[in-house]
Length: 390
Image (cartoon, rainbow, N blue to C red; front, top):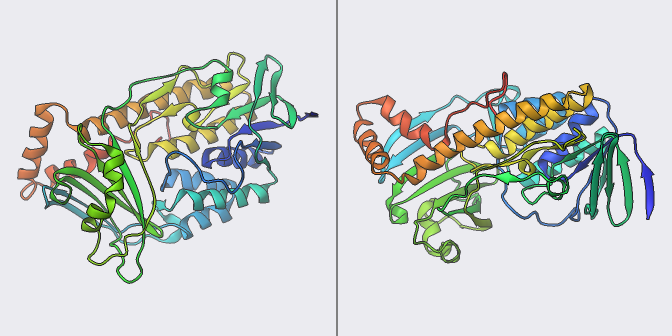
């Protein structure tokens, strides 16, 4: 085993949050080594983000303007949003296309995000070690020792960005706490068909008759469309996924090629770590290593990039307690907001279902009722941190 004494920061995990953390640390002058358990070309398990908010784009562009431009240029800014209730439109809003340098968001597949982030990290000089799983991590007041099968690293700080099953979080004895939704959600990505392109609009369908009354969300991204189906309590999500060839064409333009590029199903967790650092303030947690949210409102990846920026700043200034307090508070508020959206979608209480139906009935005469039906599935935007929506 080689022993490397490294006076720099170790980032565990080369997903989008880990790569963003490495890039933001390099922008502040820190030397960075990234450890990733998987091979560089291995398929990524778990969820796949498709939405970078304006705040995330600005954060990454400040570190690497070429990356910011590439994330917008390789993404899509959809031009409309609409909501239907039992097949009847209750809200629609269209947008004037913004200048590329003021894109309000960019919708693009996570593999493309990661490819662009890897290129930015290489330009910045971050050192990425693939197929390097963490086998041991120990922290002390003086720093962190991290072992992989091939090497040992001794660093002042480490940042765990290694996802929901974080080895870093387990090593420092921090637990995630929070409920798991009893409702399953099926997510399917469909490739664009150039002969029959899909409209560039985000649409939410309450009680969609095309899906036997299930709620359906569709979100376009560059090169495809994400279809998110809320399963019924008695649904078998795996069986519903296997039957997609029967129901999916009904949600797409007539004759669309309907090529599925990825699918999965989840029962979303609403969990936050007890703390976002170890007891010595030497190990920091970011992204899904520190919190898991239902994805409504795009809080997962975007809050992870906010974590990354805060972690880089805390390491540069030495204010790790400030990072832990601010980002833990943001995580709790993001969980609450995602929970409100999840409750609205599943509508377990009779009054919630009645409120939705009343708003749908009022929507032809009340723009406010239509706006509420359109916005409520995503929850409020407030992370409780000045200057941050996540």
